[in-house]
Amino acid sequence: MVGLTSLITNDPPMPPKLNRERARFVLAKIDEILAWEQGREAERDTKFVELGRYLCEVRAGQYWRVENVKSFDEFLERRFRGSRRKAYYLMSIHENLPPEVRKELKEVGWAKGLELAKLAKKEKKNFKSAIWLHRARELPVDQLRVAVERELTGKETEPWEIVYFKLYQSQIPVIDRAIETAALMLGSDRSRGYCLEMICADFLAGANLDNGDPETLLFSAKRFFQFLPPVERQAFLQALNEEAA
Image (tube, rainbow, N blue to C red; front, side, top):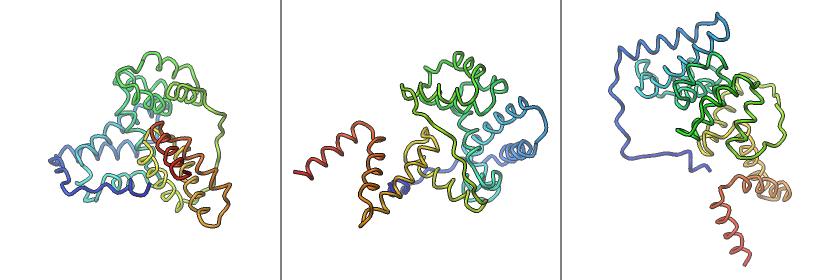
């Protein structure tokens, strides 16, 4: 898994021509929205849709260079201190939801919009926006999340619960970075809970490689195997059979 995090090229693409006037306008709008705290929930959701659009433009046009930062992630760190997760959520809504759904987000809220964005990303032109907008209006967030998961996987989800941890501010960036890295390697459509499970399974497997608990090692290996795509499962089983022979 470590090798997947190193994406190196000898011929990097040329950065886009920087439109400084547009960049300053967009960055000012982002700061204005982030500083805005008053208003009703519907107004807040509308603002967040606008914020997601501006953030996507900053990344595409590399407007962050106006502020002399080294990367888009560093730009986000300055404005979303402690966690960049919400910024990426808002960008996902803008990138994946069709315009007619984004216009109605003030009625359903951005949290539901994020669930719809997951489905729209997978189904693309086959996404039934009218049907899912109706469901988003009718269902609470938790029930909509279950319905979307069922649609994505084609099966009922197993029972789940929300687990709370107390974290110090200094710990949050490390944990967020680990989960974001796992999402890059496993697929951005994976939930944060899934990414955390894979991180923990990887830790348990590594901790029990040498003179550790064989049952724990087997448990971790089973979890990894369960989430392999069918082709990789067959290759893995074939390799095991060859080793056994």
